[in-house]
Image 1: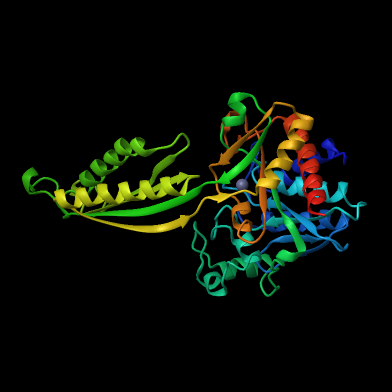
Image 2 (image 1 turned 120 degrees about the vertical axis):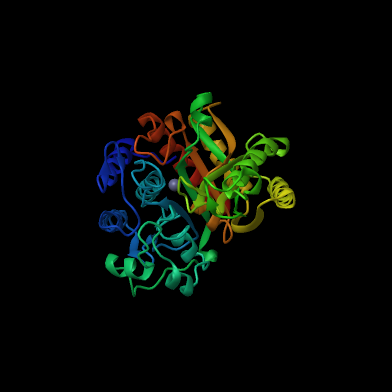
Length: 406
Ligand SMILES: [Zn+2]
């Protein structure tokens, strides 16, 4: 069995966290100067581990294994959310690096490592893994802008020094599959006191934009009976959604109205237009369809009841992605060896690059606990012994997958 160097894993994670360090977390948006520096640092580490490494035209750091035989691709993303945590993404990249080192002398175990670009969506969603899997057309790159300041993606790539470089593309025949480790981000493992999660499915995420169109008017002179207040219509519809969705929810269904707008959003003006985004997530495609049906039904009811008009449109939709059964079994076997009875199968309620990769090759994911279920925040953390145990189990699972493929 391969033995990982736990202290080396923790030291590398801490070193990577210095790029953009903020309090106990990290602020490292995609293509920012610290993100670019960290990608060069990672490329150097991949090279030291014996991988032929490039940073490609979208910013992916890809460490190729020059030896013959089929390979297992491992990795995650390396940028962070704004003022985010030190482990989200970085954990999977450093585990990948450690696997490349541990298996460097073993010609039968070809590990290749990827640090994907912009999984966190500072510019787009999953830019790096989509580019790698031929799911990111050039014209989308032309049109994409930064979500915070509107910087064109082409300009950001130019400034980062990645423009003009070829984009690395997957050759699925080269790989047994893709394996990603990640912190759970939720609190399931931490709450039950378990140490490893075997991901069964990455949930689907559906987003709708709901617009309510009323009539903008004076907040003093317009009698109540005459009003078409888009704000009131939105609040009522939002309450209906939150009241009715539980009727069809499964144990892990979640829904969020995370963005609302009022126009003109002024204290003495009746809102003429309101908008909200309604998002729901589930691992079951049928339940997602039920949520959509109910949402459209409630919007239709509100529209007919008046006095405001309701318009609804889908704006983004990803389908649930089951993880490979054989990979799940290998992760479970490795977990049982090192932490008997301390693991469970669970869905991932967050999106991950593994979902993108799963369209081109078998994919699997392993979780370690997040303390208190906190993530996308600088205080995100995991116990050091869980980080070390996770790396060992991940290495054993990788070996099991490569052996089973022979
Ligand atoms: Zn992540």
